[in-house]
Length: 151
Image (cartoon, rainbow, N blue to C red; front, side, top):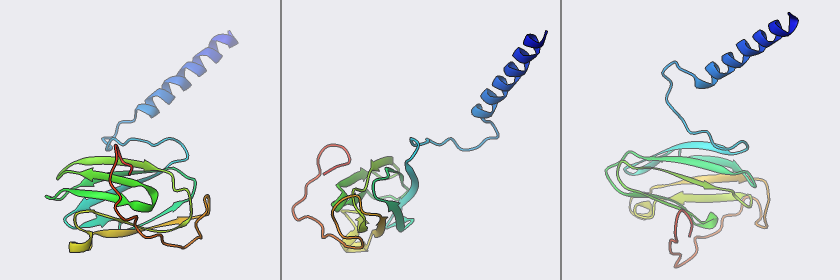
């Protein structure tokens, strides 16, 4: 008899877990990044990023969900970390990368950073790699985009 009660309790518990996992309540559906990943939502518009300042940790994977809400094509580019994502007007996209060193970096739109000041700052804490913390590395000259999100 006690085995039947234990089985019943476990069954109710399992059904409760499944119900909780399925949710409900009309919340917006989100994509959960792998455990240990920093998840950021970023609005890209004509001609700004929101948020304009980001903070990450060296060696910790970051996933940034981008939403171009503008009427222009934009990019999310961080030269020193080899990140580049092109977004057409109204398009959503995601970039994932792991900063390999601490420091201060600029993210910007390749089309509108100099003409419209479309840029922001990324502060990476820690020192996984070799760059001095707080140092800013200039953008490489003549960098050309490669396949995917990387240069």
